[in-house]
Length: 431
Image 1 (spheres, helix red, strand yellow):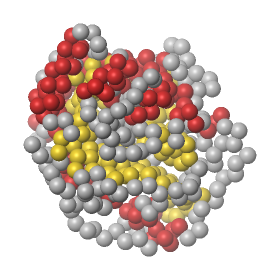
Image 2 (cartoon, helix red, strand yellow):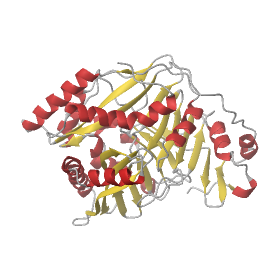
Image 3 (tube, one colour):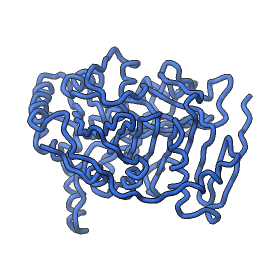
Image 4 (tube, one colour):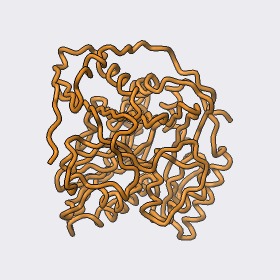
């Protein structure tokens, strides 16, 4: 039987205002680092907790869905939360699918590690769990000096605009032919031989685009800098919650224009149709692991403001069937429908055909699993991926293609979603 590790609790009033930055600077020196940041935002059903976890390279971890266990079902449940990520390619473990496109990254398909030290922020204190000896002094000894903006060249499209527009037209034909109802088409913008400080860029991203499901992940020389507004799944006891986002419009520059934009999104039939199709997909996914008759939609077409965008968010809930753990839930629901389309398997086959780079951790998930079996997982969007060993830097953006899609409008939506990332990097997209 596991025992609770020691806990050191320090009041926030005893810590400097820079403690978060110092803690993450300390944590980023480990081969495994995961940080979850809610940015003080309100969100229906809550946000990420502010958590930080670290471990050395040889820490206990699982690297595939087949090896992932539900903590509550384990004969020796962990004493601490497990922290990690699920990449898009876990789809290949769930369905008879492959990924053969170009890959600039080499993330393991799945990685959840047991931390040697982890921190939890509460309203008035920071708790340091696990190996606590000397940790506070090490954190407080970190420098948070700003080194200036990153030096990043213009990003190149892996899928040139003309090819993207042609792909949207072809997908419309696929929809007309009954292949899919909707398909989420993504494309990558990248630069090579980039030397940057991932931590500094992350904090710049939090300033430019604060989000309720943000996070920073290091896996060896791979980094994820995530400003996600989207929850994938949250488990609280016997209840599971999913909140797909489908529907996007820019914010207005004045209060009056902002309200007009909100109203325009609310009544946009194409955006509502996209959202409804994905809600139906999520309902069907959750029904595979839910008690019969418990899947419900308490909010449909909810509109929520973010720094640059209005987003249309719906909420789907269900009561889980007995003895249902995280592996069961992932097999039923991953990848999230908001990033694939419907029907899901055919959509993923067409994604492999139309996209020309692997998504990696983009449209996967980062999160944490409590010893009780409760978990919180986001959707990895609005994110940068970076390899410090090769200098490869990229982000991906996408939009849902339906038969009513206008190719130019879809491309503009992608650029709108890229706005904060380009602002943070102080760069542009090359022609």
